[in-house]
Image 1 (cartoon, helix red, strand yellow):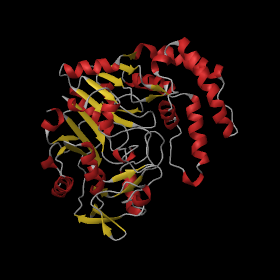
Image 2 (tube, one colour):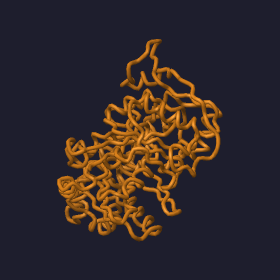
Image 3 (tube, helix red, strand yellow):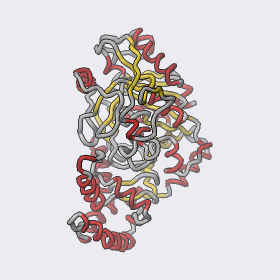
Image 4 (tube, one colour):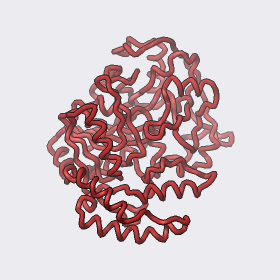
Amino acid sequence: MTQVIVGAQWGDEAKGKIVDFVSDRAEFVVRYSGGNNAGHTVVANGKEFKFHLLPAGVLHPGTTSILAAGMVVCPRSLVRELDETRAKQPELGKVVISRAAHVVLPYHMSLDALEEDARGKDKIGTTSRGIGPAYTDKVQRSGIRMAEFVDEGLFRARLQAVLDAKERLFSLFGQTPPKFDDVFDEYRGYADQIRPYVGDAEQKLQDAVAAGKRVLMEGAQGTFLDLDLGTYPFVTSSHPVAGGACIGTGIGPRDIQGVLGVCKAYSTRVGTGPFPTELLDDTGEQIRQQGNEFGTTTGRPRRCGWLDVAALRFSARANSFSGLVITRLDVLSGLGALQVATRYRLDGKELAGVPMCSHEWGRVEPVYETLVGWEGEMGAARALSDLPRETQDYVRFIEEAVGVPAAILSIGPGREQTIVLRPDLVWG
């Protein structure tokens, strides 16, 4: 079975924990888009792991973790992440990096920061990790791929050509690009460390699917940060939706049997951009503190708000969710009555779905329904029946409102704080 795990909101839905939990039965775990602008936190065996490039399934020694062609990979960050992960858990799964993945280099990071600063009050909230400029080079067909990066002669020639071309772009900002010798000397060292991992990822994946092996596709960020379907321009530079798993891996759509959509029991967003259910009050702050809602990659406080099932319905259809994973239910404990946005109004008229333009997203008015909240600690629950009756009702409300059954519930950061409701939706 080939399964995709997708963020159903604006990212940070605790996908990393779910990938780690589900991948104990997977033979391949694949990260199919994005770069180190995304972050997954996993708590396993009493240790906390933070992943920015490695698939969260790498903690299972029996798996093969693939960084696919749809990714842009920062070698410096990857080497550091491998070292830090092995320091906590020496035995990891096998890692394979696609020869077609693009490389993020220092000039990408510099341009990212320069371009964001030039936007002034119209900043889009980039992490300045160089992701956007790396994807820009990819589209302009001037990027450096991993196969070229780990070939020292090719890397030398390609880097010199790219830096020569970038000189004119940097001059528009009154800057000069990084020096060739500085970049080449540092990054050929990373290439030496990364070279053993670079291989024919696409062939390995196609062979695995053809052989009926369990393959788990891991999305980064979330549906409403998708370049096409998200709240443009406040989006990422790739396709975190389920369709991106096909674009970024070489696996065809008919080979995907299931899509799990991960959503929080509330909503969050990092950085600027529309956020209809945002709470700019004490309740929003309480959710932030109880949920420790600070970015894995940047440490920035996340904006917090009520659950938005109007957006979730669109997400469910855009990704063809076969099951929902509802996380952070424990965070809502003690908040009192809970509001859930079930639909939008725009200029006094009710919308059938969600807007596709950011200027409309910013003007929609959510229409709320009120549900009874719950009290108490629930981290020790191991079945749905162990949860407060009000929590069970909340889960059923989400299922009915979105039109997708709940497959997994998460009630804490640990692997054991996970309740599987529908095993058939997890691995068939």
